[in-house]
Length: 464
Ligand code: CO
Image 1 (cartoon, rainbow, N blue to C red):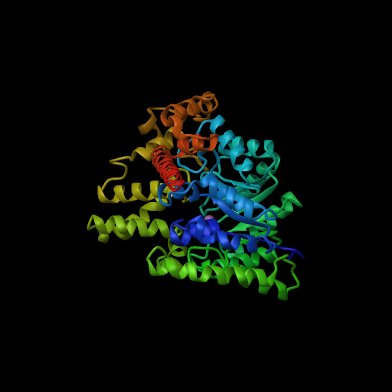
Image 2 (tube, rainbow, N blue to C red; image 1 turned 90 degrees about the vertical axis):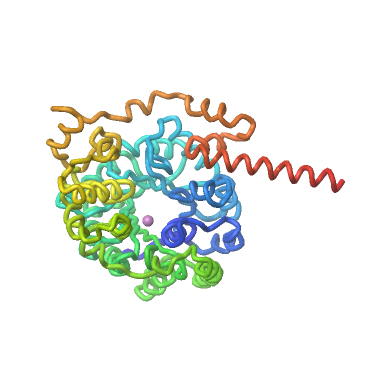
């Protein structure tokens, strides 16, 4: 175990996203930020992921304003965001100039650390975001989407880490989004990575979903991991991360220095307790998400994917096909070259498996998403895909295209389009960027901001 282990606090982003669908507004947690600033965290993960979309879609909040607010209240803490490479915070490929500008604005508004990942671990998809992060002076953390399959061996993961190091990333993050990494797997991976990369800091991100996380994190610590992701205890467990304070006390007994201030981290938890209660009471935080569900370990698929499949089969009154559909998942996944089962690939594999079973014939119908996947729109598959399916979708001998070639060719076009669509509703580059990422949501938000400003204005004049 290292003499020093640092902790990233996730309550503002991943815990918020995993337990309560990212519905925590800035105004709820603003009063605790200056206290959190004294906690001694490695970083606070506070932005990116689903927070951006949620601000505009549900909370009538400007995500950039939120980031500036956090930055102002926490001048001494490293602020961290999660970025899905070339997809930014959405699900489509953005052009290189958009990706670069997005990263520039993120850093300008307060981000210190960008954790960058691609669902398929196709690192061409994170190159532009990485280069921009370095250009604008941020720390770039290269992230690996962890999954289990016959082709995902320790050697393969170590090779990926070497690639990330060669690209110039500052740290490596192992991202176990389904919470299915076992203690033995953590040990194999972290020792393998440490042997290969020497002093490159390694971060472990996992979820408590299956109940494995505390054991896995502890073995990771024993294997030399440098940073672990945790959430303040009242927002920990279930689909969220392990508890910050619990890890603090366990590590203190081992003489490991976390740099955390005991009083402060306990005060942070006290602050969030009534907030959690409020969202439990109004149903936003479903107690189900706090439970342990080990099914994902049995079937080797993420919990969210299973519950989706059950919901779909129940809707179609076909729950008797559940076992067949479950058995079809690994078969479809093999045909697709073993993609990690993470959004949007988990949905893609799950619904194709259900279709194959319900129609009584494999690939009688091939979903549009699966067709686009074979065309190369999501990147390169981890292993060779089914040649037979590829021929059917792309024509005999057809090969996928590299969608990135087009990404580099659209200088400024998206910004021109945003300006034309928004007119005087846009008051900054950030507004334009929000529109490029989420057009209808941004338009609605900017319209409401304008109306509010006009009301305030009228009110001031009347008062005078
Ligand atoms: Co996560």
